[in-house]
Amino acid sequence: MKIAYFRKSGIHKRMDWTTVAFDWNHARSFLAIAEEGSLSAAARALKQTQPTLGRQLTALETELGLVLFERVGRGLTLTPTGASLAQHVTAMRDAAAQFSLAASGRSDLIEGPIAITASDISSAYLLPPVLTELARIAPKLHVNIIAANDVRDLLRREADIAIRHVRPTEPELIARLIANGSGRLVCTQSYLDRCGTPTDITDLSNHEFIGFGEPQQTIDYLKNLDIHLSLQNFKVHCDNGVVSWEMVRAGMGLAFMDSRVVEKFPGLIHVLPELAPIEYPIWLTTHRELHTSQKIRLVFDLLAKMIPDAMGERGN
Image (tube, rainbow, N blue to C red):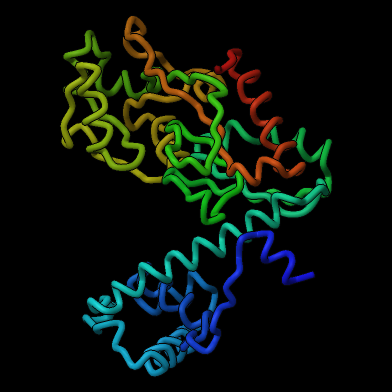
């Protein structure tokens, strides 16, 4: 039966297992060290101890008879040989991830873990109503919300579903444009009392802004809208969007914020209301194989329905 299956699948040649001269777990540790840059960081990523990883790396170098890393200060740098081998181990890692995806995609049970990644602002102010409804209709699900502003890799199973403003380009992923968001320039009355009210778009260069993440990215983006700012306008910034938003609410500066979020906080002032709102798409993304899972499909469809409904609009 096994031989018939492999012949039907096109796998005719048996592998010579004696040519595999290393432990695959050691290869996994090697790649984690290469990607993280140090034993301590790799240990945290793999949830192992640093001495254990050190022993696995030494064992792999001994098995292969090669030096894979150079010690540079407290970090590790790949040797040319190590860099070459890392490419092959990366392919092994991706194949293992595909195996995991294929297996989980066949699940027919609406239970177990599922991970959703979204920005911290969306996670805090957009997802709670969806999660409340999800808990009602699928009480056996265990949802992990990854509130992160960086783009998590769905292919490596860092998350099952992503809510983002950028459409993915990988052919293994499917994406649906579920809505179009908009942002307005807002602040508190206390800020206007302290710093004055901007009179026109050019006057914004004389005001204080709160940075959501790296200020230079905001500066570059707003320049396309003919709003010219510099780093001097951003005396305070934070990578955490919720923290930055609380700074705005405390009267520390101006910021562009999603209109849905602004509506949750009465008393905020729309600055230069004649300005056209900043518009951006909202994409819902998952893996093609995971989208065949009843569990993933349920959550995906619920997000696709409730987020546009909450915004009062529908994507394409």
